Image (cartoon, rainbow over all chains, first blue to last red; front, side, top):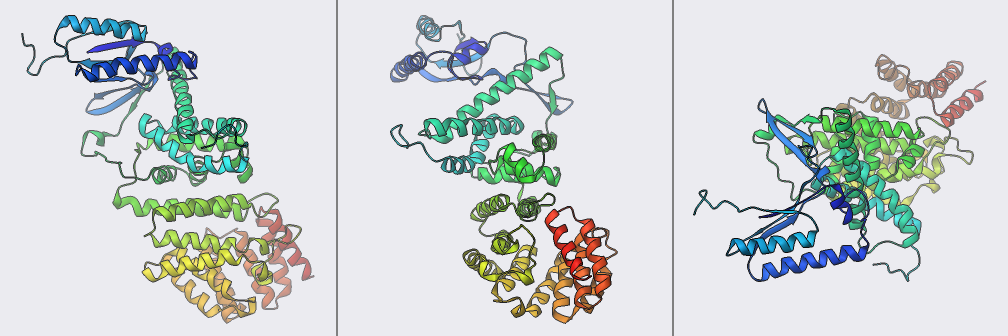
Length: 126
Length: 418
């Protein structure tokens, strides 16, 4: 799983935040084009499981059950500056290939990404 | 699709389109992001942006998507500032969710009509009638706060307060985005119909102010009731309500004189009645009455239809009207219905019989101090020849009403008896 992170400005660049995009329409189009090609390549060769971008973090609802009743609060839980912005789940033959794709992903979204293996059913298998 | 080469669309076309899209966009945003309260504000701002933007640049190829994008951006902006403020002021951001969420309260809303869901939400029984009405006009009718303020003759700030109070009550009630459960739906539909009828009456007889008829609100109530009828064609009372509105609205041109003064039914020029609306109302009644599920709206519409059938006031079939009122009074606890019934009885059997019924009504707390009771008494006294008592009753009624045209009318009646 490749995860990308960002603060509010990450959504604002694409016009997905609280105002029109801070990037020019050409930049926005070019970004979507590149992302589309990347995902298209992985879909075509069978390496893509799924992937999504997430809505602006202000739409986060934190929910927990307190004394047996559900309680909600708006916004992300932590004071963290950067929150999860999107993720892609890939299924590849080797860790090396995963690192390669994560690097390309990072270049595309122009931000740090994190790569973590998904647990196999039944826990860790070697 | 409207290309840039086409001429700039007429403002009226934009407004019609926006008002049709308003509840659908609001539903789409609420479905996806929750927070009906913020979504409603955000959609309202998107509508305002569209009014100015589209009249300059033309209607975009996909108007609903345009509105949704702008509304979601506004909502995101509102959420960001709300959360920033909470962090800054270290406010508790938690809110309790209904306990039933952990029980068997799972929902499917897939096949529910969005506009109906929004309409039922606005007419939530926890909300005060004035606020239900105001929120319905904005969220379902797509009217702006300023338009509602003008139509209701109240300050814009009052409209804003009513709307935010209504939304607060709705979120506190834990109401969710779906139609009421089937076992509550009939009762909730009654509230929806009450609100629509209130909007209609608010437009028809201004409860205060100087202009007696505010046609826009009446027309808006008819538009919304038509929509409700389209969505719930098997509910005879919805058809009855629409028929009642159409048959009443048909008289609008005959109801006021050139100076805006009230003309009573007996003296109206019936050639000015709108025959098209009358035939539509009568046709509706012919559709719903045979279903044998009568209700107050169908009966009141039937009474209005009897009036519409009489070419002159003298030709009115009072026996039939009294018979309809007899059924209606048994069904409705509304004292105003009993008051109107007394008028019909007086027309049928003479003023003495009507006055007798009025005496039995005078003790009803809902009617004590109501100008209509005093006005009806005055009319009946005049008919029975007690001119001096009649004059005093007209003046008493004039003092009780807040509508300037009604006051003028009642004072004029009194003056004729001197």
